[in-house]
Amino acid sequence: EIVLRIFHFNDMHHELRSVHSTRGDTHRFSQMVKIVNEARKNAKENEIVLFLSAGDDHIGNPFDELLGFEADSFETSAAYTAYSAAGVDATAIGNHELDKGTALLAKAITQDAQFPVLSANLFGSKNLSEEHYHPALIGVAKNGLRVGIIGLTTKEETLLRQKDDPGLDAGDLLKTLENTLSYVDEVADVIILLNHLGYNGEAYTQARHELEVGDVQIAEAAAKMTAKPIVVIGGHLHLPINTEGLNVVEKSVPILEAGAKGSHLGEAIYSLLPTVEGLRYHLTARLIPLKARDDRVKPDDPTYSNYEHDDDLDMDFEKKVMAPLYAKLDGKLKEVIGTT
Image 1 (cartoon, rainbow, N blue to C red):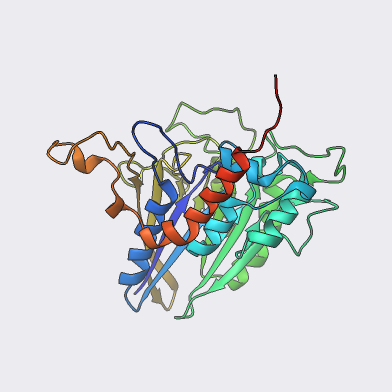
Image 2 (image 1 turned 90 degrees about the vertical axis):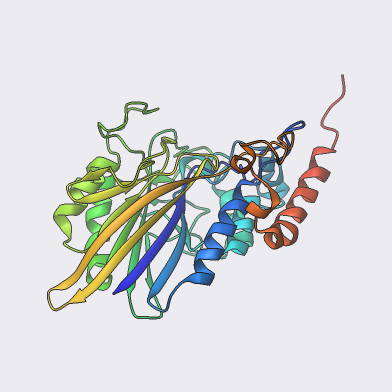
């Protein structure tokens, strides 16, 4: 038996840390890192641990100030820097990755992303090339298991064909999936569709967008194209899916999404058994709620363990990786931008 454990998050929107003047700061990403690192440390010989982001890693937090407003004013992508240090295996390009232009995204990837960035349907950019992002990847584990990961980016609220990059466009999602999956299926044992499209099924009614093509259509199409284990890990609509265990499945394809802004860390576990006929598989999934900080709560309070404390964090990561990013941001926020 082979165990494939996949940790996933989406729509972080740079919310690596949530600042609060009275409750104290919530260190969302360092909580995730502790969980993932403990799983890696305790992984058995037959176990593979992946750490994935389904996009919208930027835009929505003061850390955006370190991105600047064009390539010349760019300092760093705090998200990609932290992900690289944490050993994130891959990310998808979300619509908000393009908010500040493709030249700035290209610089962020080149300087800070020590992992593959994926999107199979974006094309035509004068600034983003095959040096920056890829349609798919094949990861080969130490035990020979081949994991194919395909990235897809929504057209909804995505800045395409802008003045600074008029050639950037997004291809038809279902045709892109068919073309890309036909190649990946030949060389992968397990397939992950890392979608920044949004879940648009009936299980959740709080959808934030009307979607022509979402996770449901992608799952239905993929189910017809391959008999191999395949899972959709999505984002875009900020939905915490599978809070009570795996309950969203379309045409035998599970669909996972982990809320937004570090509210949850998703965990999916494949049990894979090689047989003469191919891989027999079983998938379980859950969402791990991350804790919010409130330093006003005393240790004798019965709810004390519900809140974030230092032992919930990877403190080594917090000091070596996050603290320098906080210092950079503090310096940026001291710049005078105007007077009245």
